[in-house]
Amino acid sequence: MKVHNKLFLTGYSLSLCLALVGCGGGSSSTTVEDTNTSIATILPLSYTADAGRLLGSQCAQCHGTNGVSVNSWDSIAGENDLADEIFDDEPIMTAQAHGYTAEEITLIGNWLKTLSKTED
Image (cartoon, rainbow, N blue to C red; front, side):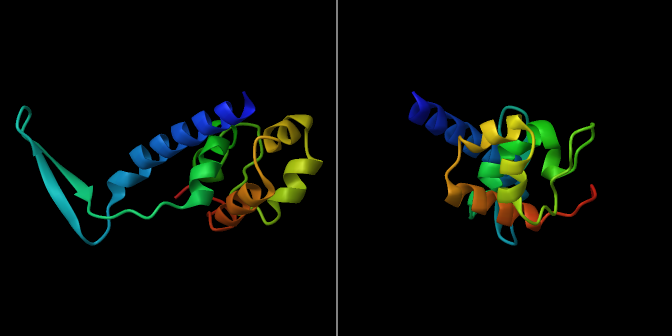
């Protein structure tokens, strides 16, 4: 059951990430026109997934978009040592950590280090 949940969450996170980030495009893109509504949509020709960002997208539910909290919970953008923070913090974070491997926590931590501590 635990593996099933992890696969579901990974697939869900990937879908969400692609929906939110995939539209950003790069220097090369293509335009697709919807003939029913005449709205042009620019789609990227290539996309490189960032595993840390994908895995860390789950964190946004509590810690805000890109790790900048808008509530009383900690902002995690720019977090320097996620592994220590996640295991030494509140019991809820330890419970969250059990859903990830040590490698996945490292990937999330590396991604969090790249984020600005303020909302742009």
